[in-house]
Length: 257
Image (cartoon, rainbow, N blue to C red; front, side, top):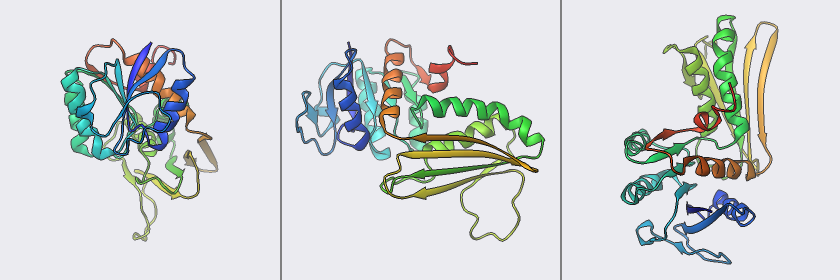
């Protein structure tokens, strides 16, 4: 039985994780952490402060806010607890802290826990150099619900970084706003556009636009269950791993490419 400390247990994703854990015979929530620790009908203890939690666990799973991740890293380092970081919108300083923490404990980080998105990212990385050499432009469109606070989404950046990694050329850069620039698009741009509205769970479209043809990679999430399923896979994967920084690329590497 995999015992999980769920960081951000009362958030939208946290509640989905709790529901799925109730249906999973191999995973259980050992404790939940949230600034609003209303216990409701939960069968596990919840804490407002991480330092108050002394429940034994195999791994921590984080679906909180960017500002709370540093504190979680401190806790996991103290407890020598593996951690899956799913929160997006992280600062460069926090990203550096994740790298440093991974030298001591196993850390799994991904901007999107969907297996489908991460498969698309692998395909984009391989397609980008071939299509860019043929004159194709790269544009990304992402759509999310009206409560999402970061833009562009972490997933849009994940896809953009996959394309840039495949291109292996520093001249390529991200452009998130062209409203103040009256000039034609430059070939080295990777455009990222964001839309917020309604209850859209998450939609991402990456297009390679060439002369007289367009190639599209599209992913639509119809529920948050896909992200929770990926988080469970990551938690199982991380258990008993040595210190290091892991990602969906590592989890999928034995199955793809």
